[in-house]
Image (cartoon, rainbow, N blue to C red; front, side, top):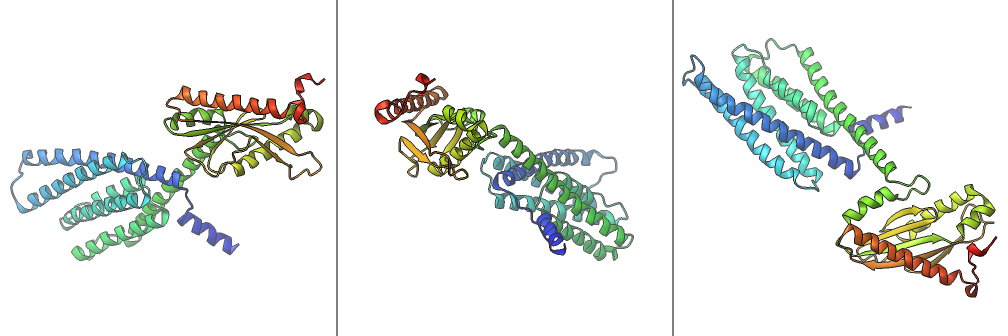
Length: 364
């Protein structure tokens, strides 16, 4: 029980996240950084323009310090906005780059907020800037839970140390301060895991909608989308058919026929390891090998025995192939049609009486 609890805690602090979902989390954080920095730049720029118009405003040290502080925030926010917008254009955003950007964003804004609040603290005013920054980060920027805890702990420790150096942290309730730090860290962890849960759920839904429920291969919806992505490149299309599948169903039953289709899907994964595999319909399967796939099976027939039912006859597959470089959606399906035509040429040959086969349409 203790080991399980330790494992659960470890998984919570260091969750296993696949690359696709990690990229989604990073892009969402970058989008938030872009929006927050743009809003901060606009607000701080407006503040700079308004400062000199306030009644009683003079070129004094305290006012100039505030002016420079706001100006720094405006300029830094503009730089972050431009940089994050540029990074958003990168479709493959490396996680380490995103982590550096998020950490710099968090660190600089936190240090700036501490600097601003210490001037307010020294004057006996409320400290709000630091907590505003922490709330924004907790709500919109996602770090891995352990990193969140480290960053929040460092931020609150820095604020307390600064307050202690100004007035020995007078007026700050240490217990309440620690509770706020814990709540900030918990908020960041909860936000990360909530997004992770939703991203995993969305991915499972998307996979289910693009996956054939019986074989686990891709379905026609996935094919429609993949065709659009793989035009203007060399494609080898294979159309595969289970020989005499209807007769097999009639003799052994549909449940066993389903098992054959599942086994066929597994066999095709082994024969075409680097290709896109689809259940095209019924007992027909489509394989699209994008690029020059040297590991693909190139025969026109394949025979295997279903592992779980050794008393069953061997299962044989007929395979038709066509190669091309389609330039459009329509040309890709023309290539698939050629592979289908090649399949029926193979079947016409191997199913002929001369080769020990028969035309099932003539059987009663």
